Length: 310
Image (cartoon, rainbow, N blue to C red):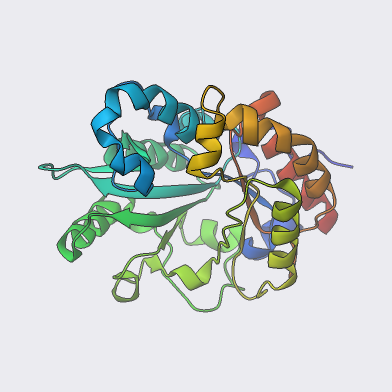
């Protein structure tokens, strides 16, 4: 059986013709959860998305920051490294800093500047004309309508003609179709202005149910149920991640998200993945924490699920 993940940087480019002619919503696509948290460091400030107990303890920020970092970072590799390793879906959360006009990615703490990351993604797609990316702007914090409009203008300025216009039906959106029309970027925008911009895909286009549990059996049942109920005319994101509560993190205060939630899930995650098949009503996008673990085994496993469609 052909190894579809032999060259992760060009895995879409190298897919057999049969797969490049299938709707992208029928392909198995690896994604990263909280994709930009790699940039969180000891200078990062608490961001407006932080949960209420963290906000209430903000006066202790210098003491709490090292602990928050250990429970907020979900990725260790930067965007370019993730792209080169086959990740094609990115989970993005946006906020603005007080007294600043710049946008930042956030997850309890401020991370990378949005413009920096988007420019890196654009550089990648310009150099990889048969690869596509799905950018999912999941959550927005402290943005006014005018801020949304300015952000969308920034997105259009960076990606230009590479942005795939929204259409209710997605059956025609194949890799070959996108290549033929020079489209490489699909923007999912879960904000209030998605319905007035033709290059923004609304939340309904890619449902992404959140398991919100730190218990592995509950997670597996949840993502199985999600696929069972999936609308095969739309995209679908399976979140194969555990989510600690603030109190769970405090109980394990000297440990980390990776040690308590990510590594314990690894065996069951791959067991679950091996049972999946992409295609009509099957697995589509699946996201994970620390996608680089064991030499990007996650990317390789998800991409090779597409063998089942040959």
